[in-house]
Image (cartoon, rainbow, N blue to C red):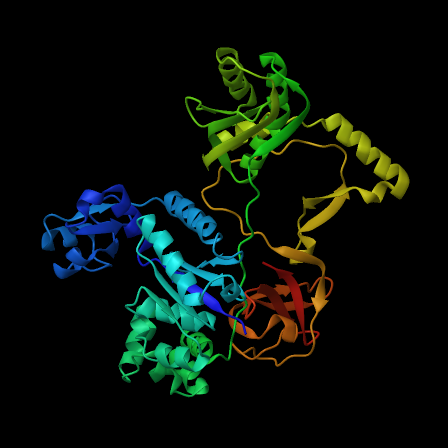
Length: 495
């Protein structure tokens, strides 16, 4: 029987702020979106709430109610780093951990089979709670059977740790959770409140068709999750590969110069791994295991975080020259600490990347010689009326290094089919749910945006297409159109 746990750290940005300012614990505290008087308040602590400060107010309005209100902005990078660190910490309790993509501070853990490693899942949950409390977090840990049930109880229960041994008990407890605790948008929450629908149980007492027609897709999705009609699978985040690089020396060495060349072999791989994570190195740890078992650990910190290999090697050279080794080195390891990099740091690193364009062109020439001139192509923008005519494939004559540039708004990338894919016959008027666009495997359509009409072609062949973006139950966003002339639906691409 599958078991699942939900770990909730309420108002995670506020918890991070109070960790940086423990002396604010007894004062009114708020997390704001912007560092200005009109910045919107996102999270508040209990003291601020007692003074009638509420999320959604401006900082100036909150300050008028609580003159001693302390407020700060918690950077998104800091929150992302905390979520990543919490994911790694929770992975010591379960190999499968999924941080929520929609709500900060919510994590799901696969607990299946772990009762064989612990006295009970309740003991396991208490261990998680104790571990997070030791890191100055205030968590709630719920163990149950369903994704929604554990989430609802973690959000709506006052208990720090709780475990349910049957699905029936979990469902009964989840039915009592107020909808206001589940992140329901105010519009839907207020509409439901007018009918005295205030708990999960009240919502489940309504018919699904009535929920969809009267309250919309959001309320229907919540009904389906709560009833078990929709059970999304868990998507655990893959564990990141360790940065540490080890090497066993076949011939132990004591020379600082020879050891420097060993470090030079290990360092590029470590820096490349950091660059892939969009990080730069803030500290380099050097570990030397000597003949006889003694271990020497050295820590090097550049003046500023960097990916400059030569600068780091120079620091290693100076440190190796300054220490006296009592015995030869048998094993050597380098490890690094990374922090988020800005665009300039990554651009400098990749510009220095050793890419032999001449060797690449020679390789492509061999591909053309074996498979023909049309084997190596590149996309080129073209003038065309229809989406599939807006680009063309032309021979790739030479290679160039990428030249990224900063933009204010990122371009939305669509994976477009060279030839639109013909879809099975469907009803002419698209509904927001129940339409199986690509079969059962992709689920039904949830909502659509459009239509956006493309017409013309009177000079060659008449074209009239009604494009729309359709969001599927699986999360896919399809770019489809109805060809009025051919009276068929087609799939143009996927976003």
